[in-house]
Structure formats: C-alpha cells, structure tokens
Amino acid sequence: MSLTKARTSQLVKDGNAVSAYGTEIVALTRGDRDGNLHGQVTGAQFAEDVEPNVFKDLNAVSSVGLPVTVWTPTSGTKIRLTGGDVSVSAASSLLFEDNAGGSTIKYRTPVIPANQPYVFEIAGQAMLLSAINNVLKVTAASGVTITGTLWGVEE
Image (cartoon, rainbow, N blue to C red):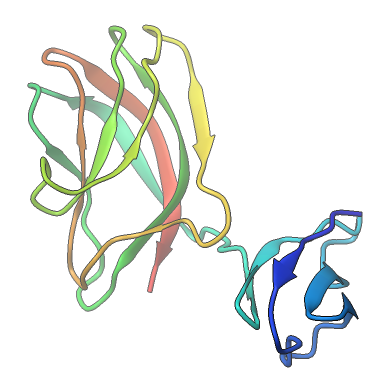
C-alpha cells in the first residue's frame, strides 16, 4: 500500500479514513482496488488525482521554432494537461506553453530522440492553464513534426 505523509493540524473531513499520529497524517485509506493511493494531501484536504477525459490528436503538427496551438478549450473552460504520448521527426525537446507562449512555460520534456515514443504523465493535480479560454501551445526545434496524443480535462 502507498503511504502519504503530510503535516497538518486538522484531519481530512471529506469521508476518507485517515491514520494519524499527533499532527502528521501517515496514511489515507482511499485508493484503487489494489490499495494504491491516488491523490495528495494539501494542508488538511485530500485532492484526488485528475482523471483525463479529453484526448487531443497531434497529427503531424509542424513546428517552425515558434509556439503552435495544439489544444483550444471549449469556451468558458480551462485546460488541465495530465499527460501525453508524443514523438518527433528529429531530436528535440518540447515546451508546452500557456496561451501566448514564450513567457509561460508549463512543462518541458527532455530531448526526445527522433521517431521514438515519449510518454509523460503530470502527477497529482497536473498542469492547469492560468485563465479560462487560454490555449495550450507547443514549441519544438524548427522543422520538427510532432505526432501523438495529449490528454487532460477541461474544467
């Protein structure tokens, strides 16, 4: 079983059972069928991990070394990126950026070798864009084509 530790002065009150010693929460009993905990303690609250329900296809997205929009949310929502499975046509890292790009880098991959799959998951509460209706952009080296799938939620 996974254990989560967090300092707090209150116990979680959302129905999750806790084991506590003093002011330290040492375990939460909420988890999957194998007993693995999926969430995090922040202060006195237990926040469950985000489950993706939106999947965005990246079908040969061409990069010219500038931010390219890869996900436009439904009007009135924010994007929360939880992960992806991508490959690139030439070795490059990818910068996932909030809206205008360039100034607000939200996630950076390591250099991905050409034509090799790279799977990433952003644990816990994932990566929430800063404002409603902001688009998610990606930047790669000039001349790189990006293929794969991104996943997350719109909230």
